[in-house]
Structures are given as structure tokens and as C-alpha cells.
Image 1 (cartoon, rainbow, N blue to C red):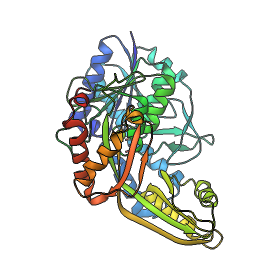
Image 2 (tube, rainbow, N blue to C red):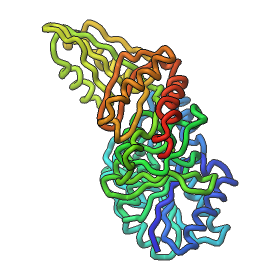
Image 3 (cartoon, protein in one colour):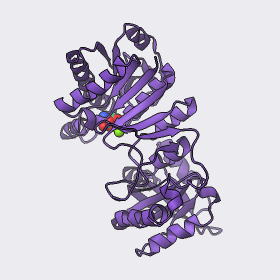
Length: 406
Ligand code: ASP
Ligand code: MG
């Protein structure tokens, strides 16, 4: 008898039919004799609709109230799923995030899990029933409701799997695994059987929406394998684990992130430090920093941020324009960040030229390139994003048989 955590995303519980479908998957696992903890997200577009509702009342709602509102979405799902399980003759109990023991810090709308007290879940499991937990939510030290950031239910599931010592954490979603590229953009993309935690973490950070990065981080730390699989099509998905890739199968996937901007700054001083300090004090997340052409007296840099963060950063720096001796502060939104991910990239001197060739084939000449052990990323025009992914996919995954066998 194993303990298995199963997580179902919003689209998997979007309506009555889907909820029953999920209930049958859960019932199947439970009836095989396993202990099952289920984590669910809010139904369909519920979270977006709640945000929209808040927006109709206030342009800047208090984050505490926003969390109070957003947490309701998941609560609907847990109750409905337990009712469906009951209809199938399976005993189940629903728990909110706080009932399940999720304690977080106080950063509303992007809280981090600080502690997970599992006594309640364990005692419910001991009653020989399925436990269904609301993802994405917890309670802070002031007993206020917090949420973990968009897509945070994956992280709730991974945290439960780690804390409970689950044998596996199965993330059911509307795709059946991790692909060599987003199959909606590249029809030739194929599913990966396995991917390493490191590779998955990089992919999650550069626009692959299949898993919340923090869930991968947590699973890696605790050594709990994650499996991404389809809630619609039966069959195996992609396993995210420590051990992976044999030699010759080292480039895994190409992804593109479109919601990024470049903030270009110039200042009459030498160090980027005071600028970055301002951004870090306001917790503005910067994805990449490229400092270019700093002369004795002049600083020029480009910061890559998500669109909203770029506007936040611009406002924060603008407010200190004189103190920071700024000369230029410009946001470019018409960009996209294309990344190639794979553990073999660090040793593959040919990968970058091959990538650049695939891009120049479609008239893209990136002006920002970063290359590391597991990822190469370039900045391209946003309007060329899909075409670029297709071209890079052809170069790396359609011509080369070695990579096709992953
Ligand atoms: N319902 C939340 C969201 O839409 C959390 C999640 O789906 O993981 O972001
Ligand atoms: Mg998700």
C-alpha cells in the first residue's frame, strides 16, 4: 500500500462531467488499496473570474481581501469532488488549506509555505478515506488566509507529497506530459518520458506552463518523483526525477515566454548595485541582467522582467531618477524570451551556433544571449515567437535522430 498524492488542475474539474471523471481516477487508485491525498484547483477560469470581480470593485484591492476572495475557488472544488466520490461509493473528506495544516509567510497573493502540520490529514487518512485538499491556500502567522501565487496548487501538492513521504506526486492536467515544445505551437513536438528536476526547473522558469516552478524545487529537495499526466487520456505521462538522460539525449525542450519586457537603463555612475537594491527592496523579480558597455562614468544595462514587473520596476526607478543619476529608462514590450533546455548544453559548443542559425533562417538576430549549463536563452521579437520555436524545434528535434529518441 502506497501513499499517492494526485493533483488535478482547474480544467480537469471544470464541470460536472469532468469532476466525475476525476472522481473515477481517484476511486480507481483508492480501490487498489492505496492511501490517496487529492489536491484540486479552482474550477475552470474561476480564479480569473474572481480577479475580475475584484477589479470591478477596486483597481487596487487590499491583498488580504484578494486572498480571502481567491481562496473560495478551491473550496468549491474540494466539496464537489467529495460529493462525486460519495456518489461512487468512496468515502472522502474535504479539507481547506488551513485545515490541512498549510502555514505560510505573510506575503499575500504570493505566499511561501513555511510549515505543513500533517496530523489532521494523517488522522483523516487513518479513517480509510480519501482526503481532498484545497490547493493554492494557507494561513499566515496572523491566521489570515494567504494564497501561493498563480498556479500554486502544484506547489501545494508537492509540499503534501514531501511532508507525507508519498511514493509519488501525480500532477494531472490537460496535457499528457512535458513535450519537446508546446504542441499547440509545434505539432511535431513529442512527449518526453523523463526529464530531470534541473531541466524541469529551468523550463518552468522560462515559460513552460506545465508545472509551477516551486513544486519542482520542492520535489527535488525531498526527492519525491513528480509525474505529469493527462486527466483526460489514460496512459503514462512524463516523469520528473533526479536520474535522467543517457548520453546523446541531452537537449530536452524549447520554450518561449512572451510576457516579458526589457527595461533599458543608462546612468551617470558605474554600479548597477543601487538600482538593483531599489528593485529588491520592493521585491520586483528580475529574470536576467545584462550590463553592457559600462565606461568609467556611465552605466548601461538591460533588465529582463515579466511585463507587470517591468512596469513596477520602471515606476520604482523613475521615482528615484535623480538620486540614481539616471539618464535613460525605457521599457520594450515587443520581445519574447526563447530558451533551449537540456543538461547536455553546457558541454555542447555547437548548440548555440545551431540555435542562432535556426533563428537567422527566419530573420531573427537576438541582441541578448545567455548560455549556462542547462539552458541557452535568447531575446527575439515577440511577433516571431511561434515561428522561432518551430524553426528551433526543426533544428534540434526533427533533423537529429539522437534527440528524437528521448
Ligand atoms: N486556482 C489558482 C490559479 O488559477 C491556483 C492553481 O490553479 O494552481 O492560479
Ligand atoms: Mg497549473
